[in-house]
Amino acid sequence: MFEFIRTHNRLFQFLLLILILPSFVVFGIQGYSKFGDGNTTAVAKVDGVPITQGDWDASHQSQVERMRRQAPNIDIKLLDSPAARVETLDALVRERVLSTAMEKLDLTVSDERLQRLFVTDPQFASLRNPDGSVNKDVLAAQGMSSEMFAARLRQDLSLQQVQGGITGSVLASTANVGQALDALLQRREIHYAKFDPKEYLAKVNPTDAEIEAFYKAHEADFRAPEQATIDYVVLDLATIKKGIAVPEEDLRKYYEENASRYTAAEERRARHILIKADKDAAPELKQKAKARAEALLAEVRKSPAGFADLAKKNSEDTGSAAQGGDLDFFGRGAMVKPFEQAAFALKAGEVSNLVESDFGFHIIKLEAVRGGEKKPFDTVRASIEDEVRQQLAIKRWAESAEQFTNTVYEQSDSLQPVIDKLKLEKRSASVQRAAALGASGPMASAKLLESVFGNEAVKNKRNTDAVEVGTNQLAAARVVQHQAARTLPLAEVRDAVRQRLVMTQAEALARKEGEARLAQLKADPASGKLTGPALVSRAQPEGLARAALDAVLAADAGKLPAVLGAALPGQGYLVARIDRVLPRETKPEEDKALKTQYGQAWARAEAEAYYQALAARYKVEKKADPLAAAVAAAAASAKP
Image (spheres, rainbow, N blue to C red):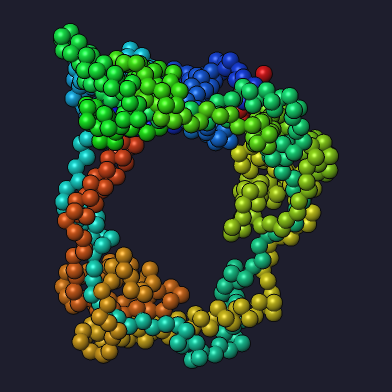
């Protein structure tokens, strides 16, 4: 077991995080200065009980600290998103809803059941001593006492019971799974004919009268949309960062306060010889094991170079004996306390005295030491400066955003005042009411575009209000030139009108011939020449367009051969004959896995639906704009 703990230390850390701690992931920032103390402003309510700003901040801070303990070198940039605070609030609300349901439904876990689950459940095997008690050393390495562990485990198991009855009762019958999978994986053997409009283009030549008639019937398709040429400005964290200078002494202070992030964790490589003696063994047995260990220690003292051979022959740690007792590199928290203390007190090449642990008696030889070195300030200065400037930008965001909002509103005849005040860049663009395909940032904001084409901007020539176009990103615009929507004259779009008409007439010819071929096949399914055979399915369309494949797979194949025809908008017409229907081509083990996945998907959907029902029952209320609140909280957390 000692070797297992050493090898799976990482697993234990994440097991504790995922299975025991509240099951929601949160992100946040640890600011350049300390977080504020929080307040009692309600940001949400569950069953009439408020979740305060202080609750939100405390939960956020607690989880960030846990993440940092798990990953000391984590990049702080991953923890500085106000949008992530919204995730924190969502997770906190979810936990409160489930906790409320747990209390009202009396779903707490009894002491007897808690003990039984801990002793029998394989997922907790790594946390148990041989006698079934909690391994306090493993818990201590994670900063937890056995009482904390029991409380958290009880809470976690109780919460699981709220939705457990839903997720555990979903049954995926063979018939339902088969029907669902057949829709995706069933195969059909067909012969077919495609009537492509492109093959009929040469047969059509519309007259001027036909072109004009088509234009009049489709004038709405030949309109120039409403357009505007605008100037606009954007305020975001990157802009604020540009104007921030950080004193050198503050950078060095940040470096010292976060030393653990810039220091590689010290690790040690050791060999050991274990003579087992359970902590509850009879005194005479323990004395016998100790005497044997002392004899081996004497041999090691005489010939330290033979340590590996002695370990192979005598060590009772089955995980490392074959490797000459080699435990590879390990860090603090990986081993039980007595072993760790002895190993980290040795110098490379030294051999310990006897070390007694719950597993028995150890003889330890330290092979090597690595890590523990702190990166020089100069090598991390640039990243520290960027982090600090980012956090200061967040701190200044609320103030700058207020200045931006007030200035574009109060001096609405020009964008220049806000450009000068906040050192912004003026940008230009041509826009329509709907965002262009592939647009990003402010030009993809429906709210900003709506403001651009509003009366205040177009008729009264005023700046738009400040609009939130992204996380920590505000924009305002001014219309330079506006053009109303208009129908384009025929002379201007004649070529486009003719092209549309030609394709429409060619498609009509293709459909006419296709329908004639369909009638022939219905009368005699064996008549005429068809392409094929082709074995098609959703996974293997064999060159059929999506619309054609949909038509083939949706057709009634109860009586074969089955003949079908389908108009394919823009692609002509398809005539097909279904000759055979073949079952999905999957192996038994694949069918079993698919059935499991199908059941899991339904269970997740049912659990989420039940949670939404609970949220409605317990009247979840959230602040109108949680993202804006998160931005404000991020700024407040950076205040000294």
